[in-house]
Image (spheres, rainbow, N blue to C red):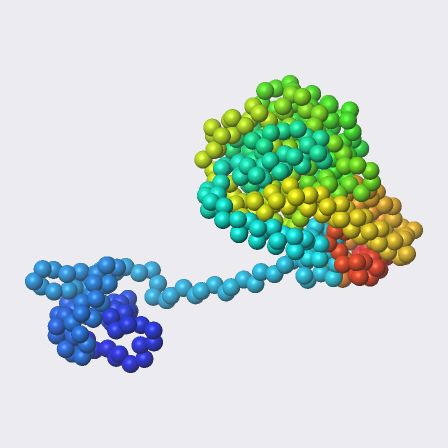
Amino acid sequence: MLTYSFVDLGSDSLYEHLYKCIKNDIMNGKLKFGDKLPSKRSFAKNLDISTITVENAYAQLMAEGYIYSLPKKGYFVSEVKTFSKEKPKRPEQRQETAEELSFFADFISNRTSHDNFPFSIWAKLTREVLSGEDSTLLLPPPAGGIIELRKAIADHLYQFRGIGVSPEQIIIGAGTEYLYGLLIQLFGNSAVYAIEDPGYEKIAKIYMSHGVKVCYIPMDESGIRPEVLETSGADILHLSPSHHYPTGTVTPISRRYELLGWASKSENRYIIEDDYDSEFRLLGKPIPALQSIDVMDKVIYMNTFSKSLSSTIRISYMVLPEKLLERFYEKLGFYSCTVSNFEQLTLAKFISGGHFEKHINRMRNFYRNQRDILLESIRNSSLSDKIQIKEENSGLHFLMEIDTDLSDETLEAVAERKGLRISCLSRYYHEPKQAKQHVIVLNYSGIDREKMAEAIDILSQCVNKKAEN
């Protein structure tokens, strides 16, 4: 007769403990295929437990296939094939921490400072949304997003970007990366995408991860080169004409019309205008959007609130041309909007209440001062006679061409060992060897002002280091 101890059960019930004991004996080979188990009544009497306890343990073992029963004969051990008698070890939990925390200064990240987020206003508007008892809060939003936010965005685009669109043309999504995925599905996997070279490397990774073909179009001082685009076989052009990253290039009006002309030559050609960061041009008015001069309905305008508010507010939007809008709802209208109603309504109030405009103006002044402090730190350092600053007015980064014996790769590595996270322009080229060397891309939006002077001194030490043989 099988005998088990019922001391130190822990959190298990009696039947769970009995079930585990029998299962372990089966798995360890103590109980073999075909062995008969004791009857429920005799087993219960031997263990001094209730028959119900034994019955429940047997029922669980049968449900999992460890034992089987034969009418009027009893319970028997099933044939259990195992690959290993050892339970696989649980993998150690990965420690995920913010990457930039390990650096003294991070000139790559575009994170938003905690002190610059309008917490009090955002909290007030959130309370208003939650206390409004609006029945729409808990209803699934339309595929394009709630109409209140789309109306607020449409008004903002008309007043500040010169874009006249209906709210229905606006599609809300949790980040531009998600919206890119929708567009790829909309156009189909056979479409070929042209991207800027150099360019933001993540864009190429997103397209390629969806299995679509990507071609890299070289740039000149005016942006994408139309003659190369024309022979590339591309159907969709992805570009940032108002503020290119990382060069800071602004595409002039003549080149914009050339690109619109390219798009008009085929029904299947479109331009995705990524207007990220356009609000923060620090000299003069923001550059008009390419979409505002598009009369052929060929431009898909995209923007995000991740930079203007916070990188953790994953709310982005795209404006579809009318001819694509119908196709979108026919093909992709089954998708649910990926941004919660709570966030959408709060943002709608933030924009329509004039808070967004005030926030942008305040942040533009903040970033202008941020840039000026960094430039002053550079001028007062030993770097001053070894560098040339370019595109300092175009947005939240600028280029610094530097005189050094180090290769770009070595310079980045030396800086990292000294606690600086920097990137050179060559990193953003499809073929880095084709890039101009010794040009650093300095993102300054998230740098602590108290650290700027010291960070530049550290960078100066890196630059002065002689190239190792």
